[in-house]
Length: 206
Image 1 (cartoon, one colour):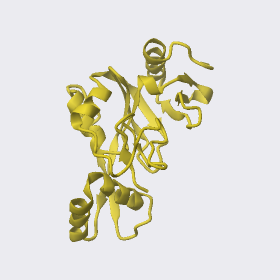
Image 2 (cartoon, one colour):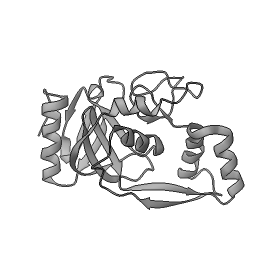
Image 3 (cartoon, rainbow, N blue to C red):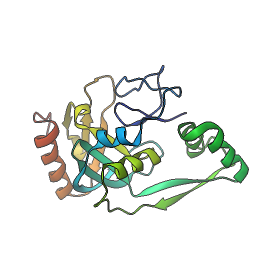
Image 4 (cartoon, rainbow, N blue to C red):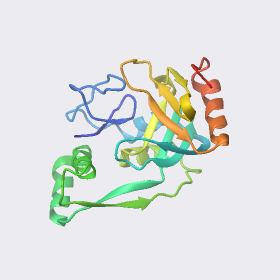
């Protein structure tokens, strides 16, 4: 599996026939990486912390914090998974010959257990992002596929079944994103953001 950062929706996804499965934008290894400035303009400026959150996102760390930006929502895991190669030369060769996005393809295979020679460890990430400008947020997103960003335009509606939040995209063929806030304050903050910023007409709020 090769994960690429989509230049349109700014999500790390595996291409499907050269397209992003989320926004249907072009997504291919032949397409240059989006610039730091382009990603920063998509994310916008940091607005504040909504609360502690938990999200099922493959094999990536699921505990993290949910932040509001001027253009959407940013989920940042509390830990960043770090690959520890058993062969330093092999690691350097991978980075130099394939580039960053191709490296994440190998990164994912090791993370999912397909490569038995590699080990991984978890590195704790400071939870405070206050003071980060849009360029710093973009750099953070580009460096870690465990981070998720949802722009306001990609959230068509939302609902809250059984205490979880489902962010539903305009493309009804894509699965909803599910996350859970850790406390009531976080639930209230996210609901207020959704009602006033992204989706004024929620579905199945209770």
